[in-house]
Image 1 (cartoon, rainbow, N blue to C red):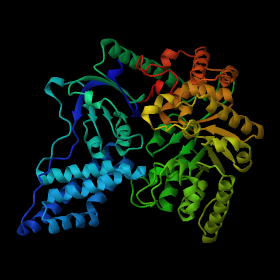
Image 2: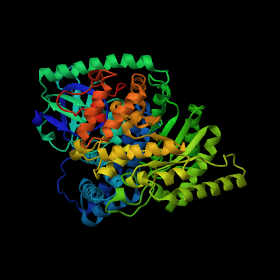
Image 3: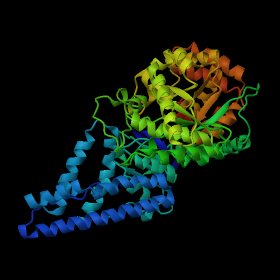
Length: 608
């Protein structure tokens, strides 16, 4: 069984049963050819024609993406178009042609492979991520120069009528958007993660996707039957009849649960013993707003702002940010919208923002540290948020706070920015509520002092778990050891909830833990009364809360806090939750015998 199971990171939810098609996404072979001096100008002309062809192709893909997925996803292709327009790249290739009399394809291959090696070894995740953008233009330009442009997915005659699951070492945005949505229902790749451009497009196009499949991709053959689970990050090769039946039965359970969730939509999240839990939405991208509103979120508990800068060559203007924040605020006139200030650094340095490479960027210059060290960058965002507060209850939340003076400095900067706006006669609020994300053990230990300075706090359980356990949450090899149910994480959560309750300051949870039903049960038991949830999980968490009673959840949480192992915590919580709901129904999307029972990945994304 183990040899047939490929494990990776689920980046676009859904379960699909189909046949494999392997794409050898490789550069065309280039002959080591040289040209005569008389042929040099002709080769330069060929290069220019190939670059124009590739640019026209990328613009076509951008337009196709705009129609299929939306304006923000279409911007993904801007980086590739700018590469093709880059005068330095073109001049470097022309120099190789002139000085070494290389053919256009040989010179372009030489220069782009040099860039590829440089970017792939960078400590900047964002620069490494651009390698897939470079791959897209390499394949198109070299394909034009060599006459070897081929189609991406061709349905085999013997597989007619069956869904296709595409397997590739690396996925580019261009490849992803060209996939026939009617034929291709799943994608798996070795390279990439949740923030990869191809992953963003797969989610928007509704194609289940697993990335980071480190081992086993070489065992996949064209036409091989497979099950791909983009929710749990798993692929089963040559599934048995029993496994196929289990996956199909899981889909039936998902539909049954979906019917029950629909009954809870529009109703408040109140436990059976009358405890009110407020459910807000986490919004990464503008297109997620529709789902947040549709599923009756009580505001936005985490409005991420990194999409405004990632994959772009210029920083967003004050006006662009103001329009976005105000647009979101108008969608929730009676509820708060919590804007998280730029969480740059780590794996999210934009092309428009220059930063020296760091040996360990996740423990380096990132988040609030970047904002306070670059006040001009931060002021633009603060101006936009202060102006947008006139449209609704816009609040500001600071990520990765570990020092008390980071809050004080931010408040000083807000006051100075508000004064500037008033002096300029720009309509804006005089102040902003300031909250803190609790994402490190340091912040959890300093919770009493932070609560004395902050208007609210919100627990980012993804990073809190990562830094508490010293486990990279994106490492597929360590995925089974990464759990927010670890006893150390539970004790920090209890500490935060108790401290906030004592002083009457709102404490919410905005990490993935809040979107998992077992974990939501635990959080209610610990005393959290505000959960910020991914839009597809809002209905599930609301329905769950309406099935449980808070006192029973508190008893289960107390027992879990006494456990010494993660597995004990899981067993306690699941046994207690089984008194209220059918766990088999919740696990409808789980493939039997593969996924562990306690993880967020163990439960289906009902709307996928």
